[in-house]
Amino acid sequence: MRQHISFAAVALLFGTAYPLITPPFEVPDEVGHFWHASSIAYGYLDRGLPVMPRGFRIIVWALWTPERGRHLTAEKMRLARGVQLEHRVRVPLRTPAYYSAAAYVPQIGAALITRVVGARPFFGFYAGRLATLSASVAFILLASWIAPQFRDHFHAVSLLPMSLFLFGSWSADAMTIASALLVTAVLLRAILSDAPMSRLEMIALICASAWLSLCKPSYILATLLALTIPRSRFESAARRFASVGILLLVVIAAATLSVWLTMSTAVAFPRSDIPVDARAQVQFIADDPLRFAGVLAHDLRVNGVDYIKTMTGRFGMYDVSLPAPVTFVLLAMLVGIGLLNGPSLPPRGRTLTLFVVAVIFISILTYLYVTSSVAGGTTIEGTQGRYLLPILPLILAALRVSRLRVPVPHAAILTIAVVANAIAIFVLLGRYW
Image 1 (cartoon, one colour):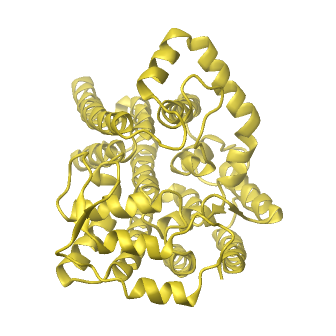
Image 2 (cartoon, helix red, strand yellow):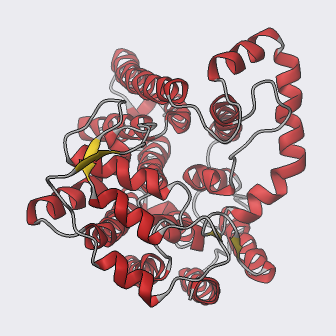
Image 3 (cartoon, rainbow, N blue to C red):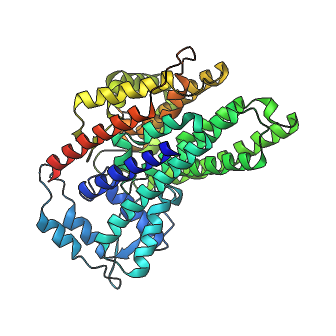
């Protein structure tokens, strides 16, 4: 219990600092996330452009600027605080619905409350950031309670500066990470436990998996690890077949809905800054799979190391980096936890885990190639190290070497996290203020 309290204290302390110090909309795609989640709170659930109170557009104009070299000023903040909601004046907002409402649960809740009380958009924006942080920390604590053997894995990943930065934002990545860690916790508990699998445990796995598939469908491939749950945990072969079958059917249905929503939106609202054609890109892949495999290999060869480094922390519009020594220490901590902490997975589970992780990342690259890259091009646009965070605990669990018996102390994890996040906050203060 003491470790959970100390984790929550550190996460909430620095998690509150990030949303307060990071200027509004200086998180990747935060304008779109803010508008989309708020539009759901106003009842807009289709893929069309929602018609919202004019204040939602004005506050973005007042605060967001593409000139990244400029610092935020007190005058801009004063101007933003004064923006009125203007209920009676409605304007359309270009906010493509790439993600379902499942990716914005706390943000939508905060938007609903601020709508009811008639709060100005400025205060609603910060309420959404803090609501996302609170929900994320709560879900990480739940994951740690479900699979206490992997507590250090969940805490270390969640205390990375990149994770806390995303938790304190309107980004859909926050709930994606939280739901992925919940699925990971339930799966690891199911794989390693000796007790008969209860109905509640199976329901938890199905619900968490459905939520994750509705957030970002690529990550739901992790549920394939359910195939490694020992047969002895089920009362009979028939019950095992039925349980896993129901799980897969629910996941497939939710993932299909999520993929349809994402891809249809990408087709209807292509990027305007580069020539993207999702249909042509899919046809290009189908016509020459080997050439596309070469594109994937080239991207991993050129950018793979950067993905790993930036997974620990790259802030703002992906243009503010942690000092290299801090990144090195964080990566060393993660490797140490993977090798030394928690129980070992069975050989079949370890092999399948590494395979699933590879397939998930390749599917993410494929999605970005189809939706965000030049049709027929040789580069993949938009891939970032933060996309590794939802599957990072699985990667660490697969690294465990059972012969090594001296774990990384939880106190060391907290100490490294405190120092790394303090330096990150200092970097952000220098960048924006």
